[in-house]
Image (tube, rainbow, N blue to C red; front, side):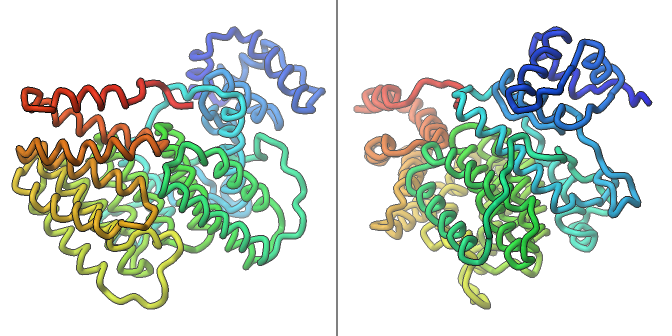
Length: 491
C-alpha cells in the first residue's frame, strides 16, 4: 500500500544529480561489493521508493545509505533517507513515533553503529563534508524533553504536554559486525582507560588528529552493544559509548563538522540514558548548547542548556550543575543580558565550592578551578561587547585561569585564555596589552589542530581592526593573517 512520496529520499536524490536508472545501477554495484550479489534493483523500484514511499527490504536501505554518503560527502543514514521500519504500538513496546516513546536499546546501538560506520567511510575515502542542515536547538530540546527527562522534569521546567521524540535510523549497521570475543569487566576497564587517554589528548591539542580514532572506537563499542552481554557489563559499555560519542561530537565541532557534531551529541545523550546516567546525558546536551553559542545561535543554546539542567535534576553533583550554569551564562552574555549573567555566574561559583557526596565522574574531571575561571572570563568577555563594564571582570578571571593552568599541559585551554584576554584589552581600549597577549597566543596556536581556535582568533582579529593606526597593530594584524589557514571545508 502506498504511503505517499518519500520526500526525504526525493530531496537527497535531487542533490545527487543522478537519474533513477543510475541510482539503480549504483545500488546493484555497491551491493555486490558488500557481498549482496542477489540485488536486482531497477528503475521502476527506485520510482516506487521515491514516489510511493515503498521501503525496500534489508540490505537495500543500508546500501542506499552508503551510496548517498559517498556521493554527498557527508554522513547519510537510513533515517535521513526515510527508509526505516518502525515497530507498531503493542508490538513489545511503544512506537518510536508516539509522543514520549523512547528508543529501545538495540535500536540506539544500531543508530550509533550505522552513523559511525558512515563517518569512518568518509574518513577512509578522504571526502570533504558537504553542507548539511544544522537542527535548531529548540527542536532538539522539544523532541528530547519527555524522552530524556521524563514528564515530571518537563513539568517542573515549565514545559507541559507530551512532545514528539526524535526518530532515527534502525535496522542493522551499514558495515559488517563480527562476533565479538568475551567481553567482561577487564575489557570494559581497558575501554574506559582509552576514553581517558582520548580526553586528555583533546584537552591538550584539539580534536583534529584523534577524531578518526575516537569514531572507530565508538563504532567497535556499538558493535559490542548489539550482542547479549551481562547487565552490569552492558551498563558500563553504554557509559563508554556516551563518553566516546561526546568526544566524537566535540572533536567534530573542533574541526568544523557541525551537523556531524550535533548528531554525536544527541547519540551521546541517548547512550547515557541507556546507562541510567541522567547527568551524563545533560552534559552531552550542554555540549550542543556550547556549539550553538559558538555558531551565533544563543537563543537555541539557551533552550538546550535548560534541557540539560532539567535532565540531570537532583542526581547531578554541584560541580556538574556549576558547569551547566556557566554555559547558561555564556548564552545570556551573547544576548547582552548583564543582570542574568551576573546572577547565574554567582550561582555557579556557589555550586562549585559546595561539597559533594563521592568523587566527580571522569567526564567532569577537567572542569576544575582553572576551567571555571576560564569559562567566566569567556562569558564576561562576550558580555563586554554589550556592557563594557564587564571587561575588568573578564580580565580578572582570565588571569586567574592562566595562573592556575601553569604546568598542567592544557595548551589549548591556555591558548583560549590568551585569546580571551587579548580580546578584552581590544574592547577596553588597551592596544599595547592586547598586542602582548595576541603575540603569546600566536606563539601557541601552531601546536593545535582546532578550527574552533582559529574561529576565536578571527574574532579577536576583528576587534583589533579599530586600532589599525596604533603603533605595531598593523604589523600584528599582518602576522595573524599570515598564520590563519585559508577557509575551507573540513575533511
